[in-house]
Length: 102
Image (tube, rainbow, N blue to C red; front, side):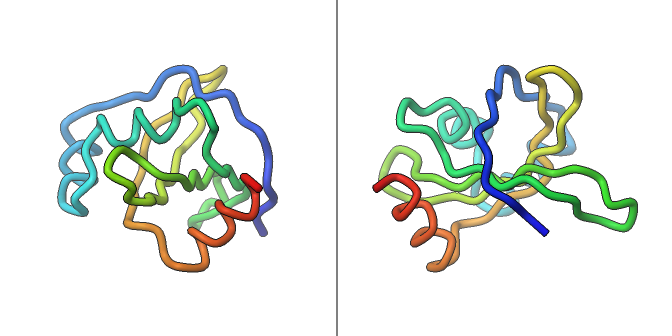
């Protein structure tokens, strides 16, 4: 189950593996950085996912050019996160972001 929350994202961890994984989906590290650090703020849903029920944050919002992205972040402690996966936001994700920002 996910709930909406405010999260301060200070630093994102990058390595060859998560960069390649996101780029396969047409998302660059610059896109994720812009999404997570935008002034208006992304919509962040928190919850548990995966076989080990690890905490994850699902971040939704627009990036330069108007595309809306959804990115899953794994908390690493403090304000540090690792981008796990991402995709172009589905229509319902875009609607939730617009409602949250109205």
